[in-house]
Image (tube, rainbow, N blue to C red; front, side):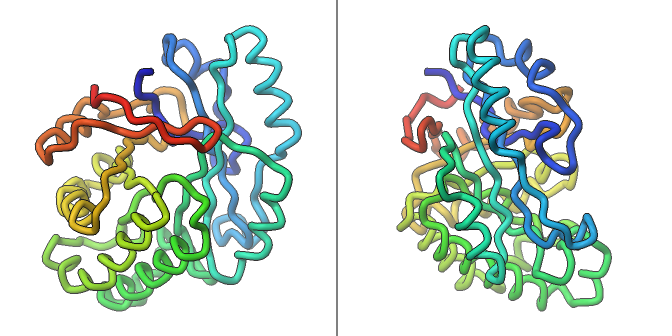
Length: 260
């Protein structure tokens, strides 16, 4: 099995207009999995609940798979807040996915990518963000991949030294993630659009220190042009850190594949 991108979106996500058909020619003979947003009380959309129409999503994939030999898989990106945990679980009941991403995007008041976050100091945000992430990996151990671990810091100028100040808390996050078999994602948007590759150099080693061995790379594409963006660079970074295998998920079951 070849490694395939495990973080991308289509028009089933509130912030994308892309279609499966535009990704498929880029995937060659590999599996294609989209990971559509689940964000309750989303600050970006006036606190509305943003979720994929699961029945329509599953039906479209089933129809496309008649033509594409079952290559299209189902995925979800769970946007976690403690206040939404019950609604998230209610939404997930009776639904099946091949891969479940776990993300922290907001704190119940605003998204960490909204300028309001800058009313807090970096130190306050670090403590808040990783406390929320610890709650997420504790609550949703059935998830498969912990995504963009620095999402909440993107509006700040953050150094590795800044992360080291909250290393005990971040190490707790990673230990719980490892305990629950969550993979650590290298996110190309984080690393190259937002310039946070240096934080991933640190994050890889801290996740390994926590006992982690499961790694993924994801483009976080919202348009087909970003499919597998910077994968060569991310594979090379993992190689520098001695990571020779990546994990892929199908039916939420992990398979280790050789790092391309």
